[in-house]
Image (cartoon, rainbow, N blue to C red; front, side, top):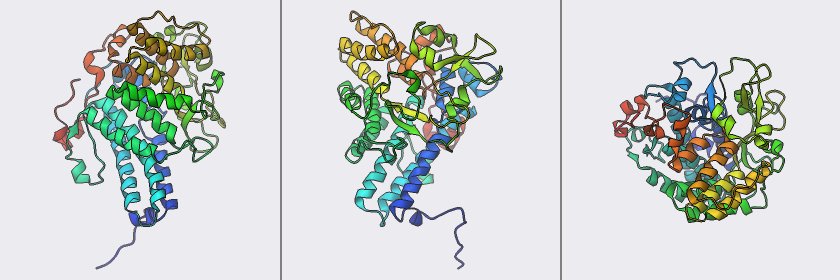
Length: 432
């Protein structure tokens, strides 16, 4: 028998996880996947842009009507479209890589048990991000921790609450290991505060509002983070409000968000929607700092949260910031019939935007609607938070006022048609 050497661009699993250094290199690759090709990427294929069109944050300018993005905007997507396959395939490819990393670290003989816990904790958090988004996009999904290809192509889908329960268990394990210290001074890696924030969102989805409150408060009360009073600093890489941001692919590269949203020509892909723009009060500092009009057309506005599309040295793509904990806490309090407490936290966000306080006389339902309205203006085009907020609170019907094609069934995306052919256990198809 002839033993053939590995290709020069590949290494074996045994060598990959032979020590902490090599395993850390593999973990770094998971972060690169997240930045470059995942649904969380700030480019035009990420859920920020695509679901910004699907909801009410963006309007197309030069997108041909047959393109997937235009079909999303018109809420007319079907299972054959590439955008759905991209969401699904890249997410599960990255989950496969995470599972391979977790399994490789677990069985390694060259990594100490303490080092394993530290490495695995980051893997669990990243995996939870993917699964938590996928179940909100598609509903029932396959959940696997295996790297067995044949098994993974026949696995049955499970209901969202089962997915969330699995993620809850993983995240609770990470809290026993992760610390609030950052592995880098630039907040490029997940830490305990990030895990707490994701867990708090998990509990909102499970309707365990008392637990969501606990973990949101932990993030808010953490002295390492605070609201930036100067809104022009929120998306700078030294922002006090940032929990986790992604490194750029070289020291002067623009963030994908800056390249994606800053208009340079008349026929850009999209602009901010009229419904989003008119929702801002005229003196809202977020409108003044985070939105800009295209110079050759005063009626076209674009997302200007990230400002450096060339020679960037002070911006990174922000995944999570402390402001989100304020909204998670407000939502958790509303569902515990403590709307006056919720209003106090919403007012902290409004005060920072230079706006008057919401009155304490708001009803529970009015407070919920005010929270969603405030969240729209705070997080527009940040990783589909608008879609996730409305869906979680059963308020996607609010889109009907600005999206005439919107129907209740659009709360779930259809499964990619090719995936149904590969794995019939995904049937029945979501209505579309």
